[in-house]
Image 1 (cartoon, helix red, strand yellow):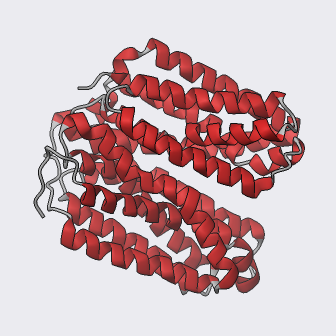
Image 2: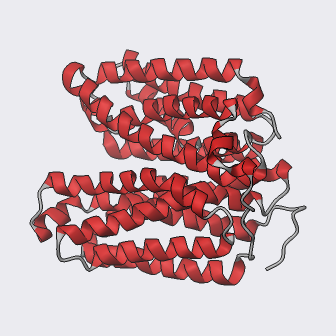
Length: 387
């Protein structure tokens, strides 16, 4: 399929958005069927909960070596291979008769995720001119935001009316349909030649890359340390709206931020980054200081969604600006690994703080991290320059 780089290839970008939507659905649907797994397979809640962690560990471990190994591969064929892994992982879960089979399915899915997230922005950037890179990545990754705000609640609702095996088989079927779209519509796009400039050592030699990774670690840790324990926060501070309304407002804010980010990310990346971080700071300040004021908390959840929803897009675009185009996949593999590790640290260290001192300290530590991140954004203008 041929297209002009002069315009945004919307059909291709929407196909990419479908891919990122399905990736999030595949990753997070498992959390909605944990009670079913416990009752049907006779495993403990801890074992079922660990299936979430196995996925993240696999993604974090494989993302850099797989990205280095596949840097020269045809992007379309690589994407079809990733979809095949997603399909296989979900089929294994759907037809599993034992806990080890469930683990294998999650590890295969995590491997697919580790390969997908670094390459998706590199692929998208090959389809458009440099001045449209940020906007194109926003559109392609908007599927991830929709996956969280729409896909996950939808799949959770389906789980209430269908057998969990049918639900997972349906997810696998959707990946099969997606593969047909990629096969027939996505253009054959070459990978990047292996050179010194896209070697891991060269990429890590860029000082600005380390600044970006520090920013990723601070912001992702802060957001996920609170996100993981939001139910505890709602209960502690007596939010009358409940978890359903909170997630709905959060999802609305995430979607709103996607449109704003798409419009301004290419021309005002520094200010967009500053605005995203500040939105989370304001939300956390409301949560901490204004206990039980539902109307203010409604707005705070919308703001938090605006500070949370664009993070993947923002950091992939920012990381890509630190290196030549041929090293985009490698730098975003590093970014994805830091992102995944920061999620795990946010959930684990946030849990330690919660158990020992309560949700208030979790919020305080998160806000400190975000304030430091904002200072880093203000004093590091060079990392936002368009190469």
